[in-house]
Length: 494
Image 1 (cartoon, rainbow, N blue to C red):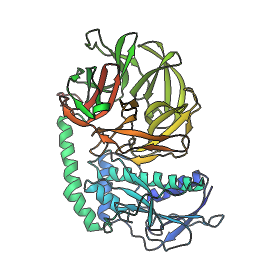
Image 2: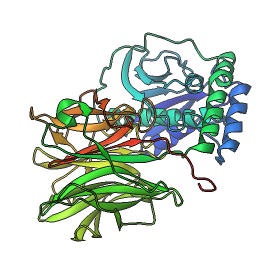
Image 3: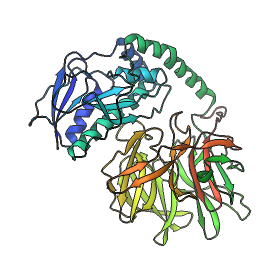
Image 4: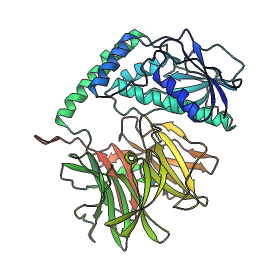
């Protein structure tokens, strides 16, 4: 526990600032709330635009940028050892003070203005106005919406602040990450937001509405090839020789994981029927000539399933599918491969996405993303370790390891390339979900440290027709990818 002074605007504080206080108290910190009188409220243009979009997207309850009447001042039980300046203009102090910069500005309105303009703002946590001690690059899921996009950014400000306070309480020193953004954008203004919203956000919203009349929101296609040559993880390029796994159009296949069993190749995929909006797991056997058979469903739950990582260990075949909608990560054992699977145990509770297994240094590890209650499922990397597959699985002390839409979410199993390097395919959300894939090298991993290299983008050049990929895997000669396609809606159907 640590004693923290949290400084918030006296007039019209925002819901995200209240959420920071709630999360800090839930972590057991002694939290005092102080007021800063000069902090500015958001302009009427932002409030009207966000209220319009809240109704348009049928979102209930106030957003994280919504103003509150007041956050009551409160004294702490002990003198503060850390200050959090959420108002953006607190006076200097002898107590270490963490402030936030949104897109280079101390005003959180800058986050809304950046999203409205179509930019992806970076959040910087700055110690005493001099040194950056944490950065977050939030994923914006619905880029057609300024309100929902701003929500994604503000919630990662909460994640960032809470994680820094937790590290401070655990006695971990601040990690210097350079000086604040040299761009130093001027503070956001009502005119700046209105210009960004009318000139960029509204037209973007209209274009997306028109697109969805004729096209499905998302339709993925799986690619496969049999090859003896070095694969994508070695060359860094998609290359040629890809075939498209046929789909009937009313549902799609994605998240392909190949597996060899008794001399035969199998492919496990997310199978998503557009009519239900809830995916199941299907298997695609390949015959001796490399021709895929008809996919058939092998696992269904009341909630959405995807990312069916299949592997052999301890004399059994296992599946670890993504099931964040169900609020837990469940391990399944094959009781009659490939059709029959039985839930064996729950490994991790929470909205955990695309958990990817690795054995390293005598331990088992899971790399995944955690939604952290709100916002995107694609920008917050967490790591867990265990002595055995059944657990117990322990969160890494660095969690969240990073908040970065460019590399947080795994996009396939770990692979060791020809040079012996351990690589993790990672999704790059810079162009949106499914916008691209990179390869990050595992540099350090133990119970104190997790470090990945900046990802090397995979070159989409080749004969694969859908270059926006988000999964890469290989088992033996069978290499698989997926890519998002523009699929028209069928007349009279969703």
